Image (cartoon, rainbow, N blue to C red; front, side, top):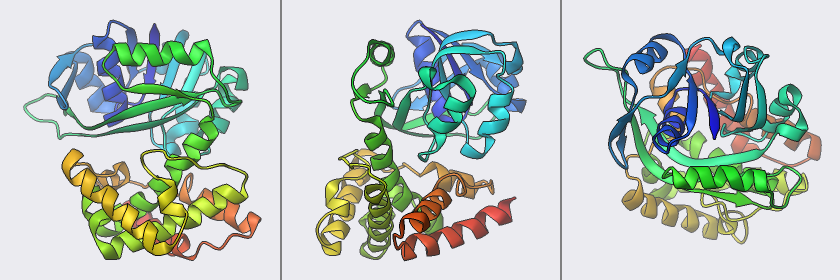
Length: 323
Protein backbone atom coordinates (compact mmCIF):
# COMPACT_ATOMS: atom_id res chain seq x y z
CA UNK A 1 0.00 0.00 0.00
CA UNK A 2 0.96 3.62 -0.44
CA UNK A 3 1.01 5.68 2.76
CA UNK A 4 1.64 9.37 3.35
CA UNK A 5 2.44 10.21 6.98
CA UNK A 6 1.99 13.86 7.93
CA UNK A 7 4.35 14.71 10.79
CA UNK A 8 7.77 13.38 11.80
CA UNK A 9 7.39 13.50 15.57
CA UNK A 10 7.30 10.36 17.66
CA UNK A 11 4.08 8.86 16.29
CA UNK A 12 4.67 9.82 12.67
CA UNK A 13 8.23 8.50 12.76
CA UNK A 14 7.14 5.19 14.31
CA UNK A 15 4.38 4.66 11.75
CA UNK A 16 6.63 5.59 8.83
CA UNK A 17 9.50 3.40 10.02
CA UNK A 18 7.44 0.26 10.63
CA UNK A 19 5.34 0.57 7.47
CA UNK A 20 8.45 1.18 5.36
CA UNK A 21 10.18 -1.81 6.94
CA UNK A 22 7.04 -3.83 6.18
CA UNK A 23 7.52 -3.19 2.48
CA UNK A 24 4.98 -0.42 1.96
CA UNK A 25 5.55 2.70 -0.12
CA UNK A 26 5.83 5.42 2.54
CA UNK A 27 6.24 9.18 2.19
CA UNK A 28 6.94 11.01 5.45
CA UNK A 29 6.18 14.72 5.46
CA UNK A 30 8.78 16.43 7.64
CA UNK A 31 10.12 19.94 7.96
CA UNK A 32 13.19 21.89 9.02
CA UNK A 33 16.42 20.33 10.16
CA UNK A 34 14.69 17.11 11.22
CA UNK A 35 13.28 16.66 7.75
CA UNK A 36 16.68 17.23 6.16
CA UNK A 37 18.33 14.84 8.61
CA UNK A 38 15.78 12.08 8.06
CA UNK A 39 16.12 12.45 4.29
CA UNK A 40 19.88 11.98 4.55
CA UNK A 41 20.17 9.39 7.30
CA UNK A 42 16.78 7.65 7.59
CA UNK A 43 14.66 6.97 10.69
CA UNK A 44 16.29 5.36 13.72
CA UNK A 45 14.00 3.50 16.15
CA UNK A 46 14.90 2.40 19.67
CA UNK A 47 12.89 1.04 22.60
CA UNK A 48 10.63 -1.86 21.68
CA UNK A 49 13.30 -2.85 19.16
CA UNK A 50 16.19 -1.10 17.43
CA UNK A 51 16.52 -0.59 13.68
CA UNK A 52 17.07 2.08 11.04
CA UNK A 53 15.09 2.43 7.84
CA UNK A 54 14.88 4.85 4.95
CA UNK A 55 11.72 6.08 3.32
CA UNK A 56 10.78 8.94 1.02
CA UNK A 57 11.00 12.13 3.11
CA UNK A 58 8.96 15.01 1.69
CA UNK A 59 9.73 18.60 2.68
CA UNK A 60 7.49 20.15 0.01
CA UNK A 61 4.09 18.49 0.53
CA UNK A 62 2.58 20.50 -2.32
CA UNK A 63 4.29 18.02 -4.66
CA UNK A 64 2.22 15.05 -3.47
CA UNK A 65 -0.62 14.00 -5.75
CA UNK A 66 -2.23 10.79 -4.49
CA UNK A 67 -2.04 8.11 -1.82
CA UNK A 68 -3.99 5.13 -0.63
CA UNK A 69 -3.86 6.31 2.99
CA UNK A 70 -2.96 9.61 4.65
CA UNK A 71 -2.09 9.40 8.35
CA UNK A 72 -2.22 12.74 10.18
CA UNK A 73 0.20 12.80 13.13
CA UNK A 74 0.89 16.47 13.83
CA UNK A 75 -0.11 18.75 16.69
CA UNK A 76 -3.77 19.74 16.58
CA UNK A 77 -3.01 23.46 16.36
CA UNK A 78 -0.92 22.92 13.20
CA UNK A 79 -3.64 21.02 11.36
CA UNK A 80 -5.29 23.77 9.31
CA UNK A 81 -2.03 25.17 7.95
CA UNK A 82 -0.58 21.72 7.24
CA UNK A 83 -3.67 20.49 5.40
CA UNK A 84 -3.75 23.68 3.33
CA UNK A 85 -0.39 22.64 1.86
CA UNK A 86 -1.87 19.30 0.79
CA UNK A 87 -4.40 20.83 -1.58
CA UNK A 88 -3.21 18.75 -4.53
CA UNK A 89 -3.22 15.43 -2.65
CA UNK A 90 -5.98 12.95 -3.40
CA UNK A 91 -6.25 10.44 -0.56
CA UNK A 92 -8.48 7.38 -0.84
CA UNK A 93 -8.57 7.15 2.96
CA UNK A 94 -7.43 9.57 5.62
CA UNK A 95 -7.36 9.30 9.39
CA UNK A 96 -5.84 11.21 12.28
CA UNK A 97 -4.08 9.87 15.36
CA UNK A 98 -4.18 13.30 16.99
CA UNK A 99 -5.60 14.00 20.42
CA UNK A 100 -9.16 15.14 20.95
CA UNK A 101 -12.48 14.54 19.22
CA UNK A 102 -12.57 17.41 16.70
CA UNK A 103 -10.02 16.00 14.27
CA UNK A 104 -12.38 14.07 12.00
CA UNK A 105 -14.44 17.17 11.27
CA UNK A 106 -11.34 18.98 9.99
CA UNK A 107 -10.38 16.06 7.76
CA UNK A 108 -13.90 15.77 6.36
CA UNK A 109 -13.89 19.46 5.44
CA UNK A 110 -10.72 19.00 3.38
CA UNK A 111 -10.92 15.47 1.97
CA UNK A 112 -14.63 14.75 2.15
CA UNK A 113 -16.61 12.65 4.59
CA UNK A 114 -16.50 9.66 2.24
CA UNK A 115 -12.69 9.49 2.54
CA UNK A 116 -12.43 10.10 6.30
CA UNK A 117 -11.99 7.38 8.92
CA UNK A 118 -11.86 7.64 12.70
CA UNK A 119 -8.88 6.42 14.69
CA UNK A 120 -6.99 6.48 17.96
CA UNK A 121 -3.40 5.58 18.72
CA UNK A 122 -2.30 3.88 21.92
CA UNK A 123 1.36 4.13 20.89
CA UNK A 124 3.77 6.02 23.13
CA UNK A 125 7.17 7.40 22.28
CA UNK A 126 9.40 10.43 22.14
CA UNK A 127 12.01 11.89 19.83
CA UNK A 128 15.47 11.90 21.38
CA UNK A 129 17.82 14.87 20.93
CA UNK A 130 19.85 15.00 17.73
CA UNK A 131 23.51 14.18 18.21
CA UNK A 132 26.67 13.70 16.17
CA UNK A 133 25.02 15.28 13.16
CA UNK A 134 22.24 12.68 13.13
CA UNK A 135 18.51 13.36 13.57
CA UNK A 136 17.11 12.27 16.93
CA UNK A 137 16.06 8.64 17.11
CA UNK A 138 12.47 7.89 18.08
CA UNK A 139 12.14 5.95 21.32
CA UNK A 140 9.16 3.61 21.05
CA UNK A 141 8.25 2.90 24.67
CA UNK A 142 4.56 1.92 24.65
CA UNK A 143 3.40 -0.52 21.99
CA UNK A 144 -0.36 -0.19 22.18
CA UNK A 145 -2.73 -0.68 19.24
CA UNK A 146 -3.94 1.74 16.61
CA UNK A 147 -7.72 1.40 16.38
CA UNK A 148 -9.47 2.45 13.16
CA UNK A 149 -13.13 2.54 12.21
CA UNK A 150 -15.84 3.87 9.97
CA UNK A 151 -17.45 7.05 11.38
CA UNK A 152 -20.86 5.63 10.50
CA UNK A 153 -20.11 2.43 12.41
CA UNK A 154 -19.73 -1.20 11.47
CA UNK A 155 -16.92 -3.04 9.70
CA UNK A 156 -15.51 -2.40 6.23
CA UNK A 157 -12.95 -3.90 3.87
CA UNK A 158 -11.13 -0.58 3.51
CA UNK A 159 -10.53 -0.38 7.27
CA UNK A 160 -9.49 -4.03 7.49
CA UNK A 161 -6.97 -3.53 4.69
CA UNK A 162 -5.20 -0.85 6.76
CA UNK A 163 -5.36 -2.98 9.91
CA UNK A 164 -3.78 -5.88 8.02
CA UNK A 165 -1.03 -3.65 6.63
CA UNK A 166 -0.23 -2.43 10.14
CA UNK A 167 -0.15 -5.86 11.77
CA UNK A 168 1.91 -7.36 8.96
CA UNK A 169 4.41 -4.52 9.49
CA UNK A 170 4.77 -5.24 13.21
CA UNK A 171 2.34 -2.63 14.53
CA UNK A 172 -0.60 -3.61 16.73
CA UNK A 173 -3.89 -2.63 15.10
CA UNK A 174 -7.58 -3.46 15.19
CA UNK A 175 -10.87 -2.20 13.85
CA UNK A 176 -13.74 -0.70 15.84
CA UNK A 177 -17.44 -1.01 15.07
CA UNK A 178 -18.10 2.21 17.02
CA UNK A 179 -15.11 4.48 16.48
CA UNK A 180 -16.90 7.52 17.92
CA UNK A 181 -17.22 5.70 21.24
CA UNK A 182 -13.60 4.53 20.97
CA UNK A 183 -12.32 8.06 20.34
CA UNK A 184 -14.31 9.59 23.18
CA UNK A 185 -13.35 6.77 25.56
CA UNK A 186 -9.66 7.36 24.94
CA UNK A 187 -10.20 11.11 25.24
CA UNK A 188 -11.73 10.66 28.71
CA UNK A 189 -8.54 9.01 29.93
CA UNK A 190 -6.25 11.33 27.99
CA UNK A 191 -7.91 14.37 29.58
CA UNK A 192 -7.18 13.20 33.12
CA UNK A 193 -3.68 11.96 32.44
CA UNK A 194 -2.52 14.88 30.29
CA UNK A 195 -3.62 17.58 32.71
CA UNK A 196 -1.84 15.86 35.59
CA UNK A 197 1.25 15.18 33.47
CA UNK A 198 1.78 18.90 32.88
CA UNK A 199 0.92 19.88 36.44
CA UNK A 200 3.21 17.30 38.08
CA UNK A 201 5.92 16.94 35.37
CA UNK A 202 6.11 13.23 36.23
CA UNK A 203 6.06 10.01 34.16
CA UNK A 204 2.50 8.79 33.70
CA UNK A 205 2.68 5.81 36.05
CA UNK A 206 3.93 7.92 38.94
CA UNK A 207 1.11 10.45 39.15
CA UNK A 208 -1.47 7.75 38.43
CA UNK A 209 -0.22 5.55 41.28
CA UNK A 210 -0.18 8.41 43.79
CA UNK A 211 -3.42 8.79 45.77
CA UNK A 212 -3.52 12.60 45.65
CA UNK A 213 -2.98 13.02 41.92
CA UNK A 214 -5.06 9.93 41.11
CA UNK A 215 -7.98 11.70 42.78
CA UNK A 216 -7.60 14.78 40.58
CA UNK A 217 -7.21 12.65 37.44
CA UNK A 218 -10.30 10.64 38.37
CA UNK A 219 -12.37 13.80 38.81
CA UNK A 220 -11.26 15.19 35.44
CA UNK A 221 -12.10 11.89 33.75
CA UNK A 222 -15.48 11.60 35.43
CA UNK A 223 -16.39 15.15 34.44
CA UNK A 224 -15.28 14.55 30.85
CA UNK A 225 -17.21 11.27 30.77
CA UNK A 226 -20.35 13.05 31.94
CA UNK A 227 -19.99 15.46 29.02
CA UNK A 228 -19.60 12.57 26.58
CA UNK A 229 -22.60 10.71 27.97
CA UNK A 230 -24.78 13.84 27.90
CA UNK A 231 -23.59 14.31 24.31
CA UNK A 232 -25.02 10.88 23.48
CA UNK A 233 -21.79 8.87 23.42
CA UNK A 234 -21.70 5.37 24.89
CA UNK A 235 -18.31 4.94 26.54
CA UNK A 236 -16.31 1.71 26.49
CA UNK A 237 -13.14 0.27 27.97
CA UNK A 238 -10.43 1.82 25.79
CA UNK A 239 -7.41 0.60 27.72
CA UNK A 240 -6.67 4.23 28.53
CA UNK A 241 -9.85 4.61 30.53
CA UNK A 242 -12.39 2.11 31.74
CA UNK A 243 -15.93 2.06 33.11
CA UNK A 244 -14.39 1.75 36.58
CA UNK A 245 -12.98 5.26 36.17
CA UNK A 246 -16.38 6.82 35.54
CA UNK A 247 -18.96 4.48 37.07
CA UNK A 248 -19.51 3.80 40.74
CA UNK A 249 -18.02 5.91 43.51
CA UNK A 250 -15.17 8.37 43.37
CA UNK A 251 -13.22 6.07 45.67
CA UNK A 252 -13.62 3.24 43.15
CA UNK A 253 -12.39 5.52 40.37
CA UNK A 254 -9.30 6.55 42.33
CA UNK A 255 -8.44 2.92 43.03
CA UNK A 256 -8.85 2.11 39.32
CA UNK A 257 -6.50 4.94 38.33
CA UNK A 258 -3.93 3.83 40.90
CA UNK A 259 -4.13 0.21 39.74
CA UNK A 260 -3.58 1.35 36.15
CA UNK A 261 -0.58 3.35 37.31
CA UNK A 262 0.94 0.32 39.00
CA UNK A 263 0.52 -1.69 35.80
CA UNK A 264 2.20 1.04 33.79
CA UNK A 265 5.09 1.11 36.27
CA UNK A 266 5.93 -2.34 34.97
CA UNK A 267 4.79 -2.14 31.34
CA UNK A 268 5.80 1.44 30.42
CA UNK A 269 7.86 3.03 33.24
CA UNK A 270 9.42 5.65 30.96
CA UNK A 271 6.21 6.72 29.24
CA UNK A 272 5.58 10.46 29.41
CA UNK A 273 2.49 12.04 27.91
CA UNK A 274 3.21 13.87 24.66
CA UNK A 275 1.80 17.06 26.15
CA UNK A 276 4.38 16.81 28.95
CA UNK A 277 7.12 16.42 26.35
CA UNK A 278 5.87 19.66 24.79
CA UNK A 279 5.84 21.41 28.17
CA UNK A 280 9.39 20.23 28.90
CA UNK A 281 10.50 21.70 25.57
CA UNK A 282 8.63 24.98 26.19
CA UNK A 283 6.27 24.40 23.29
CA UNK A 284 2.65 25.38 22.90
CA UNK A 285 0.24 22.85 24.42
CA UNK A 286 -2.77 21.18 22.80
CA UNK A 287 -5.39 22.78 25.01
CA UNK A 288 -7.73 24.83 22.83
CA UNK A 289 -8.55 22.02 20.39
CA UNK A 290 -8.99 19.39 23.11
CA UNK A 291 -9.83 20.32 26.70
CA UNK A 292 -11.31 23.71 25.85
CA UNK A 293 -13.66 21.96 23.44
CA UNK A 294 -14.91 19.82 26.33
CA UNK A 295 -15.52 22.90 28.45
CA UNK A 296 -17.44 24.56 25.62
CA UNK A 297 -19.56 21.46 25.09
CA UNK A 298 -20.11 21.12 28.85
CA UNK A 299 -21.43 24.69 29.01
CA UNK A 300 -23.82 24.00 26.13
CA UNK A 301 -25.06 20.79 27.77
CA UNK A 302 -25.23 22.14 31.32
CA UNK A 303 -22.62 19.73 32.74
CA UNK A 304 -20.52 20.89 35.69
CA UNK A 305 -16.75 20.51 35.14
CA UNK A 306 -15.05 22.41 38.00
CA UNK A 307 -11.91 20.25 38.19
CA UNK A 308 -11.35 20.27 34.44
CA UNK A 309 -11.89 24.03 34.37
CA UNK A 310 -9.25 24.58 37.06
CA UNK A 311 -6.73 22.29 35.34
CA UNK A 312 -7.33 23.97 31.98
CA UNK A 313 -6.56 27.35 33.47
CA UNK A 314 -3.20 26.05 34.69
CA UNK A 315 -2.38 24.48 31.32
CA UNK A 316 -3.30 27.67 29.46
CA UNK A 317 -0.77 29.61 31.54
CA UNK A 318 1.94 27.06 30.74
CA UNK A 319 1.04 27.18 27.05
CA UNK A 320 0.98 30.99 26.88
CA UNK A 321 4.36 31.18 28.59
CA UNK A 322 5.82 28.88 25.93
CA UNK A 323 4.29 30.93 23.12
